[in-house]
Image 1 (cartoon, rainbow, N blue to C red):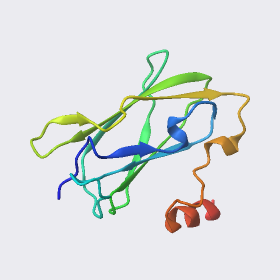
Image 2: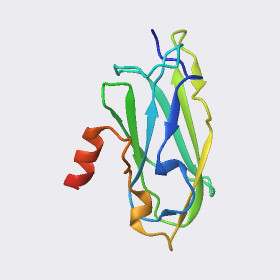
Image 3: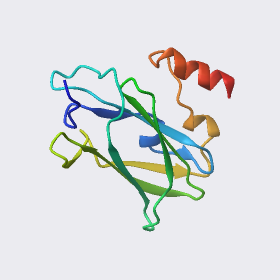
Length: 134
């Protein structure tokens, strides 16, 4: 079954408040099908826009893990709020918002770098290995 934007979701510290300024932060796009099941393949097309509250576009990296998960990594260098839009190209070639999009996050100079870490017991093992190697 094909990926569906309204069933897919985004999660991770890159979508939360009070992240650390000047430190990389990530969030994950989990592609899901019509039945709400996690997809097991990649190559979906997403369009992501991250804009600071001053209108400046924030660059990002998108990493397709070829298992239905896409990691988005970005960093901001000043205190601000950001608006994050995640669109998915459906099977008709139309860009459709992923469930919950747009998202908002904020960055504070007083937040510790650890606030930006993508950790937790429910993350896939390969994520944990990457974090441990950092």
